[in-house]
Image 1 (cartoon, rainbow, N blue to C red):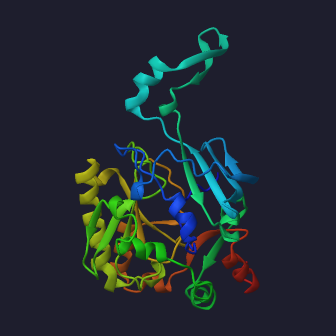
Image 2: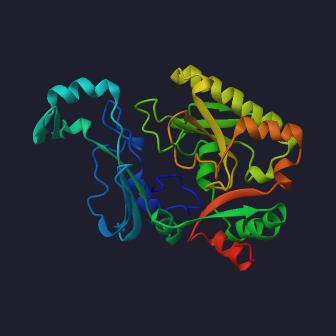
Length: 330
């Protein structure tokens, strides 16, 4: 299955010229204006030149395309948006049907819905680095078992050497970008966080609800850094995050999956909130760790995540996988 993650992990800042022309637009803005007054109807992809299809998924209704945009490398992700329940009546009454096959009680048709109900979600990564191109290319994966010593001798040096950029995270925390998307914020510098929708969620229905809580603290890279000292922070995120989602979307805690990734997509502590039943990318057991389990483990052992062996999957082209192979761990 294709990875449809659209986070901006490890992404150097794009050129000012291009970013001004490709800032995301608000499709539900009444006056048709997007962020900074940009017209939402502007087609920033009109000059896109396709180089190759990196991967596609008929099941997920997605395709990942590599090419050139404004003379720069770009990756464009096209994704069919989910069918919303409140549009069913219009789909049934205002669409054009063409019969394909009829056999006894079974009939299949090709349906052409009204244009405003036949949209796709488009994500643009530009300028795209070689890492982005490889990220969206279909790759074989391998399961890695990382001991505490492996983390110190292999993973941590790799992270430090790569100098992964999380400037886009700081822009959110400092209200320099995406401030209008913030659903909830606790401004406390030690216990606080911002909660905002993940780009994978179109915010049109609750079935695929997906939000991210990003901590204000900047010295916690991942699950490996957590100790019992961080329990108040984690409990605060869990409690206030669930309360904010209940108040804003009417979804109770019993219908939420709240978890952390290891390895994470970017090295600044963040927590995922998704609707239970939505199979979000990365929610499998080889990557997701329920926040309630993390809290319980740290109560039992203050250094649980500093000492335990952690299993996770890596794609064949991941530089970290190469480091584990060179160390004779695979």
